[in-house]
Length: 361
Image 1 (spheres, helix red, strand yellow):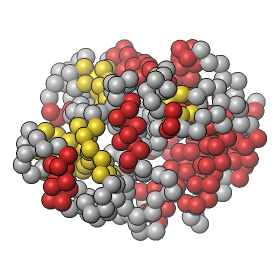
Image 2 (cartoon, helix red, strand yellow):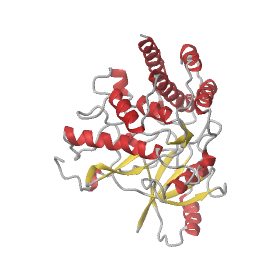
Image 3 (tube, helix red, strand yellow):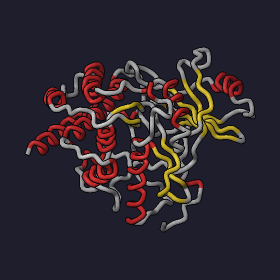
Image 4 (cartoon, one colour):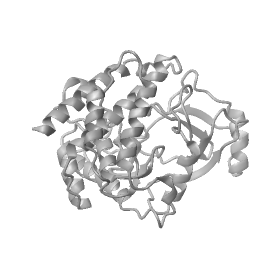
């Protein structure tokens, strides 16, 4: 690595809590100390800016840093933002997939907060968002090593024996592909606003081209660079995988399609670059095609219809974008970052149609 990264400036930092997203610190602190009696003092509370779904806070106690996760304020899609489930999935996964954070406590008492929430230990390191932090400089070869490690961690997850881990209950088994196409289509209808497309052509394509599940494995469902934690002293080394809200049992190629919907290459167009949330544009990073080929070779899979998984990932991302924009549109969140999400919905619609046409040639 070109520069020494062992300094605080490259560690992911929290900021002041956003207006309208505060909670009663004293009440939370009193409850937490009943669950973790060794905690001393009063926590300093800050908020991480990353993520557009569940809210993530840093609780800095004098001798221990903890993370609190809670749902967003305002409109919530049915079945989404299940904090208790997210906590339990991670607790069960930790012994067989060590990159999961250590869980501390989960709260279902509305007297403590207006929602369920949970607390876990902080994994302190680099979170690679749209760009690597200043002070982290990787060569092209080191970047490729990081990229390969990211895909390897996804493969490692997909190879976990979910039955031995006691996680049979987190999914519904066979029929995952069909359930996803139906479910995300329904979520889109419920979050649609007047200024976005109906997606009829794309949804018809997905319904008409659904393959059978290639396997049933534990899938993360939101696997991206900015849900990973890198070792500050060795950024090619992944020490944490975060944000297990949507983890379930499902088709691994659907999970890969989700991941590649966020994968922006250096030569992609301007609007796609505006969507970039991870440093996949850097020299040395795999292209989307290289990711598919590498993953399928390691997993011994040969997708006959990759266009389906690509389009599914784009449509699903559009639904997530729209659900977030719905909250902004109806003034249920004030985060200005969401103001133009309706435009990205249009863009993802265009990309999906382009992918379908390219796949038909």
